[in-house]
Length: 381
Image: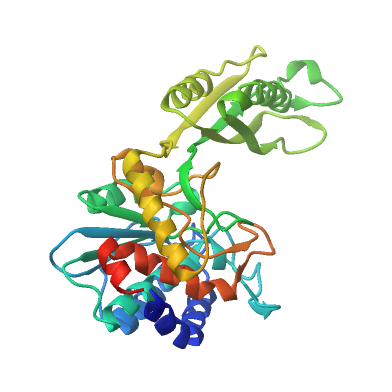
């Protein structure tokens, strides 16, 4: 593994430069034009570093998804990463400070994508990538639940010997992610009856008051012992303070550790009933991502990663985390999946989002070593 790491270290400035290029191409999930512009930048990096072009999956509403393939035969390694972010244009500034690089989506997860590209480039340049097929699946809608890419990911990942997800490592420990909660998103629209709040409030039916009842009922679904969380993250209602509100909306996030809990939560939310007479509810949404559970095959993949890491001079653990990713989909298909192979840092979805520059090369080398067979990795030490 040493000459893989040495190769990457010799190109550390170029790797960081590619990360900066990709982060500068801001890509809020719901801005298709911006996400597609970022996709063009990503295509340029793939072409420059690996000499491969994208097979583009055009989307009408979200950004286009892109598949990059290297090699025609042999066992397939699929690398998964998204290039959309939670940040609107101009919300975060790019800066380098105290060994950290800050910017929108740098940790989640543009640095991980670039590290994986360079991991494969190192194998190609060192003539270590033989009789293997590498497929990159780069999607544009992960931060909104992958509504247009989940089936696309499953279709192109099928048959993979291993799936490597270059989402960020666990914050603090740098651990890889071997299990994740399943996730769901729901919206509740509450309709009441407007009236003047001073002259005739008794003629109105407050959607905001009903919203309070529904928030209480939804949060009662939490079950920490089962690892289930239900969070009303968005609550909007009313139009004027002197009007009995006739409209309110709730946005709900759910996290579960089992399919049984997913079914329970889905049934409970789908069948919410109005508490107040004269109120109507409209509930939409679903449990979008299934839980990602560790299997014997994914356990062996973690062991391979741990052996490679030790050869590189550091140790990694496997952890279960609450957030979901596109690895949930491939794990549910029975494919050996290992997550958290991207950058280290802090501030996922926070204004201090950053990566640790010193870890870029070791984490890229880790991905390269996992792609190799055990025997090849040993020969490369």
